[in-house]
Image (cartoon, rainbow, N blue to C red; front, side, top):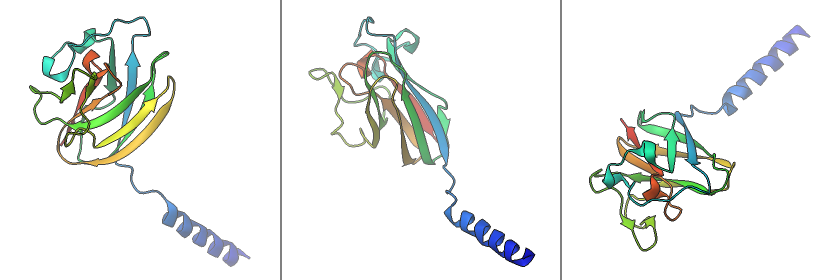
Length: 161
């Protein structure tokens, strides 16, 4: 009986090893926030404006601003009480130029190369979602592309080394 138990235990442990998840890489917590429905939207908080984001009416807060290259999981929550938000990942080639913003739509042009290499689609207030991507070394912008949100400061920079 002891041998049978030992054999079953060994088989069980081997099976758990086969189905154990691989290393998740880096995990970043993402807070999509705003100052509430009564806030005043602005349009001078884009990356190229080099703004003081402490004065922005909305934003993206991440748990780590610098991470190693490889698999990265973003766990995002929309902490707004009133507005939907999303998180888009873009390559940021030149901070002085920022992202290709269309004044007419109030949005970043996601059709340009590198402007959407992964996203968490619109989240209602209180909702959360995750996204896992593999990123090479470089500088990336995380931004919300709901009309007017990026220009109101809803972005942050992620450095991948």
